[in-house]
Amino acid sequence: WIDAHGDINTPLNSASGNMHGMPLSFLVKELQDQIPWLDDFEGIKPCLNASNIAYIGLRDLDAHETHDIRKHGIAYFTMLDVDRMG
Image 1 (cartoon, one colour):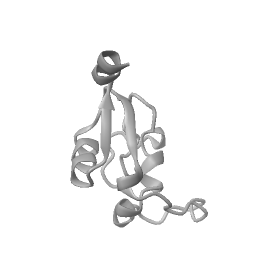
Image 2 (cartoon, rainbow, N blue to C red; image 1 turned 120 degrees about the horizontal axis):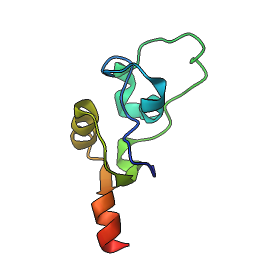
Image 3 (tube, one colour; image 1 turned 135 degrees about the horizontal axis):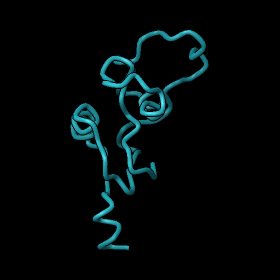
Image 4 (cartoon, rainbow, N blue to C red; image 1 turned 90 degrees about the horizontal axis):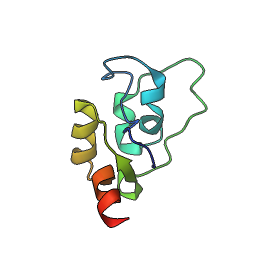
């Protein structure tokens, strides 16, 4: 996932409620217990294991995103890592 933001908030923990901060959470199998039924979202099926995700370019995470990334062992490289390693 190449983005400055985690995009892994869920409808249950998002402070803003903005869907643009949630797309990855709908795809991660381990987070499905945090995704309530949403009309018009029944076609979205979780298809990724957290162990198969790596973030590149992170620089701005919410507390819940940090918690879920650590809890599920999702690999990540911050912008500092990218600047340092290329």
